[in-house]
Image (cartoon, rainbow, N blue to C red; front, side):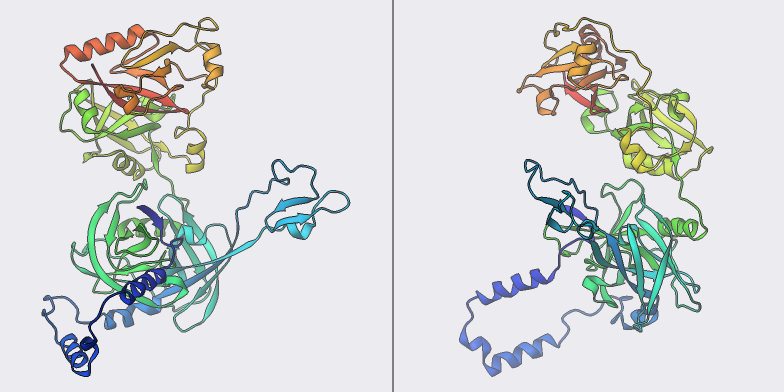
Length: 519
C-alpha cells in the first residue's frame, strides 16, 4: 500500500468495472427478478432503516450551493522532464537518436531533426479555490509545478488565464491569481474544527469532472504520512485524481483542509484521503499572497525516531523523542553544545515524540529566534538553547546527504595501505579507515570511524541490515577509532545492565543510530 499524491493516481472507474464483473458471475434465482420481487426491493430501499444522527445534514445541497462558486478547476500545460542521452547505450554509430519523440533519423551531419528535440508537453488538471475577491486561488504545488500555462475554469464555464504568485514545496501548497474582481471566495476555519466523526464535504475536479461534491467524515487528525511539515487530517470523503488542491468544508461551509493525497493499494479512492489542515494552509497562503518566500527554522542536525529498543539501550525505557544522529559542523545545534546521541524530548515546551515532530516544531520559528531544547544524554536530562538558522532548500539538503555541511578540509586517517581487520565485534569484522580504505569505499574526507569489512549473517547486526562499507562512527556515548573503543563501550553498556548498544552508522554520507544487541 502506498501514499500517492491525489493528482497522479489511476481512475476508480476500473474498480466499478471489476464490481460489475463480479456481479455478473453471481448465481441468482429466477424469482429474484419477478415483478413482485423487484417491487419489494424498491419499497425496502425507500424506507429509511436508521434515523439521521442529530446535527447531521439530511442533504449537503445547501452547503454545496453556497461554496461551489468559489471552487475552480485548474488545467495546466507543463514540460515533461525527459533526459535525452543522445545515443542509445550500446548502439553508438547507428543512424538514429533517442529523443523525447522516440527514435528519429539522423541527418547527413549526424544530428537529429531540431523539431524532434523539442520537449513534449503534458496536460494535467487539478482543483483550487478562491480565498479573496480579487482573484487569489489556493491549490497544491504539485498541480502547478513546472507549469508553462495555467488556466482556471469557473463554475459557470468561464475560462481565465492564471499566473503563479508563489509556491511552497515543503507543504505542497501554491497560490495562483486571475485578473478580475468580485469573485466568490471562502475562508479557512482553524479554530472550531470538526471532531473526528463529524461530516465534511469535498468539492473539486476529479478526473476533470468539474464541480463534483463528495461527502464523508473526519476519520482522524495528526496523521504522519512521511511529509516533514504537515500533520494531515484523514477523511473518508472520496478524493481522486484531479481533486488535488481542492477544499474540504465543514457543515458551515468553512474550509478545514486542502485535499492533497490518498492512501490506496489500487490507485483509486478507498476512503482514506489526507488534507493539509486549515491552520497550516492559511499561514502559508498569507505569506505567499504577501509576496514572501517561505522560510523555516533550522538547527543543523540529522535526526531519527527513538524506537523502543534504542530507548532501552540508553536507559530511557518508555520515552519518546528524536535522536540526534549527526551535526553540521559549526551549525546552530553544534554551537549550542548538542551532540550526536542526544535524545530531544521537547522544543520550546512542546513535547516531541518523533523526528518529524521535531522538524515541524523547529520549522515554525524564523532565523534568529530562540529554541529551548530539553534532551537526554547518557540517560541524564540536559537542556540546550539554540539560535535558529534558516533551513536550506530541500534540493540543497539532498545534495549534502540531509546536512548543509562541508566535507572538505578534513585529513585522511593515518594507517598503512592495508590495515588488518579487527577481530569480530558484535558480529562484524571492522577495520580502521586509511587512505586505501577511504578510496575503496568512496568515503568522504570528513567520515571517521571503523569500516565494516564483513557482517555475520546470523548476527543482530546482519538482521538490522548492516553491510560491508558501512562506517561505525560512535558506539554508545563515544566516538570510535579502534576496535578497542567499541569493546570498551560494550563493556560499559553491559555493566549498566543494558541488552543493546546504539551504534552510529554512516552510510552514503548519512548517519543514523542502530541499536545492536549485546551477546
